[in-house]
Length: 50
Image (spheres, rainbow, N blue to C red):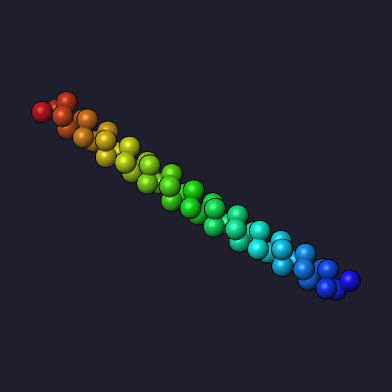
């Protein structure tokens, strides 16, 4: 029974690590998208002011 518990724990731990990595990748993607949006908005404002 201990083997099964250890296996289940290892599986859960791995899935938690994968989920955390996925969240971090997604956060990085969203941050990059937001930064690009800000750059485009600043360029638009600059061109309007010119």
